[in-house]
Length: 102
Ligand SMILES: Cc1cc2nc3c(=O)[nH]c(=O)nc-3n(C[C@H](O)[C@H](O)[C@H](O)COP(=O)(O)O)c2cc1C
Image (cartoon, rainbow, N blue to C red):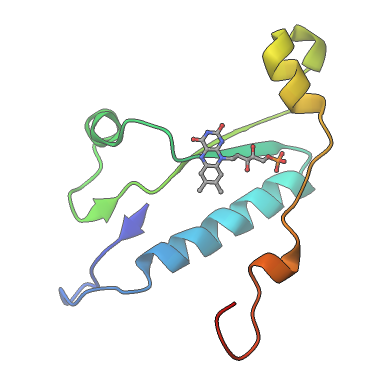
């Protein structure tokens, strides 16, 4: 949840950055505790606002499901294939630049 304004009403340009930092810390801590955390941007923002009674000056950025890992054998074929596939990460040189963009 990003708070888009400071208490004095001025805009908080870093709201999304701060929210991402907090989410990352949550995911790292969950992992350290043996939990799994799955971040999701694909949720109904209006419904989240209504169901969770989120004030208008907060922006729902992402949902994070947290739980203990289950047995992949219980998943459908499609989800099991996704769950057990080797994790692939983008090479760092695709998004870390020195001096100028690209
Ligand atoms: C901000 C954000 C939004 C995401 N939204 C979705 C989503 O809506 N649905 C989904 O299945 N995965 C979503 N993902 C991806 C998963 O949370 C996860 O990062 C990805 O499946 C890789 O999982 P792994 O770290 O176990 O390899 C999102 C990730 C981030 C960081």
